[in-house]
Length: 217
Image (cartoon, rainbow, N blue to C red; front, side, top):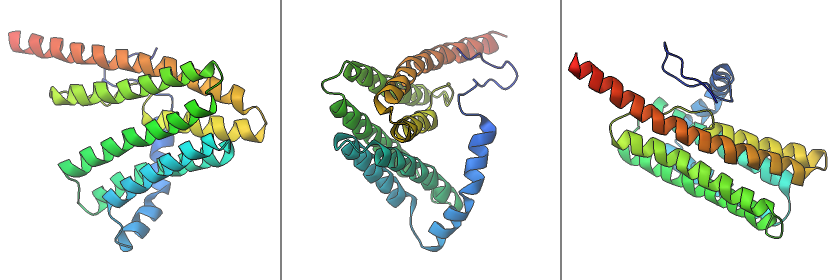
């Protein structure tokens, strides 16, 4: 399990921050293009949902390679909606909840497609565990922020889930070991997502205790 850095007060993640920052920089060109085309962030959130639904359908149709590529596209749209909103100064409370809600639907359809693919396999239960963990990761962040605590920490966030699902589907298809690759990915998501839920839950307690100590002094 990742440990909290006492100086930065952040948890390490599976994806290095430098890699995440690099991906954002490379997407700056697309962001500028979308801004010039007057494509708004909410439209990109909808496109991310459509890509997630398409990926789920492709898993059901037993086209895992195309499903993996589509999940990657879904992740790109998910990054671009925030970047476009920032570039056009159109961030809003509605946009934030709209994006987050569609993200949950998108992941649901992806996991649903995988569940249908594994409907006659024990990995169906692993898929359900991964879906539950992913949902709880998002819930704990939203619940913490509803309590006034920023909680964007943990080692298995949405970017990691999208990345793992993409790699599992694409590499599994290329090397003809899709079932094994996806089972490994689902196991990682299932276990580490629940670890992230624990991280976020106890992070809230840590912040609360620190706040109480500050008030006492």
